[in-house]
Image (cartoon, rainbow, N blue to C red):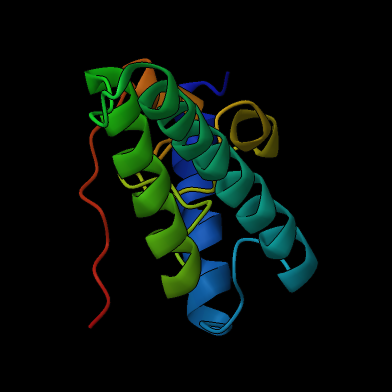
Length: 127
């Protein structure tokens, strides 16, 4: 975990780097394609479970957990296509790749997700 000073410095450095090169994404195309495939595979696995249950029981309704997972995965695909995937929705820093590997639908970095942010800074909006 970063301490408050490190996190603020990373935020400012990251913002300055992107201001100099606004087209640079959090990840290269190959990495983005890797995560897109991971997200689609997880989504397909959930849909397959729902279909299997329908075949066995006739119940077409996903559970609340499955519904929530599908919404989160669809949102992640939307962020990926918009070019914001891998950027924390709370602090706008990059989400750790280890976090995305474990939970590719996550919209937040580990610090924001656990409430460990020692500072509050509003997310920058594109002009």
